[in-house]
Length: 327
Image 1 (cartoon, helix red, strand yellow):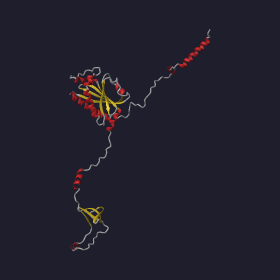
Image 2: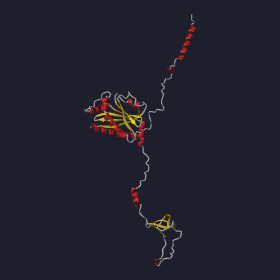
Image 3: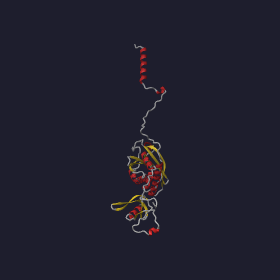
Image 4: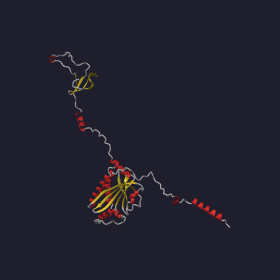
């Protein structure tokens, strides 16, 4: 017959072993269990001090020009205005799309990045009605994706939007936009990493009395290129231009002849002595021996120097310019 004391001790030992192997009961310990998630410090989704000033101006111009082109093309009243500019991520941009839409994926050349342009169905389907020959009814658009034929009909509108976008970005050297594909379900494909930083522009678009939206998402580095192109540049001093008229005059008169005379200046004699001069007479002048002579160019005092002999001929050694009429 088993000893009851031994059975009780065995039961206590089994209970103690179970408590040691079982996970701690957080509710009894008064502690809270928290879920720990990793954070990628190298991948930032928000950038501080992003300047939207230049981009607002550029895309306000884009909105006005696109409205004019659409109004002229369809002969209806279009109005488009920039409603909001903000920084977001690709994941947040996709989450804001409701149901089937018209999303243009754009290649930004020469970079390897992509931009996104969403035309709301409330704008696309009224435009399709006009292209098919009827007036826009203003009724809620059908909840479905665009067919391949409808996308083909919208090609002209897509090209018009991209052309106006490129014109406004022309100041940024080399940036071009090319249509890569048209998506109807933005959650079905992944155009870029979900944490990619984007600058989104939301436009309010009106076709007659029909209100709609257009959204444009650009990669953040593209905005930095735009801000650099708008930054004031240091003004370089303009190079002095040679007056072509002066050059022409110099080339024309360069072959002319100038009369040169070397004279002693500052000496005078009485008029009576001048009248009685004969060959062989010696004139005593007041000109000191060390004073230089003056060289006249067409009667104008130009240089001062001394007379020398050079290879059997008289020569004038120029010592400098004359400061006064008389030296």
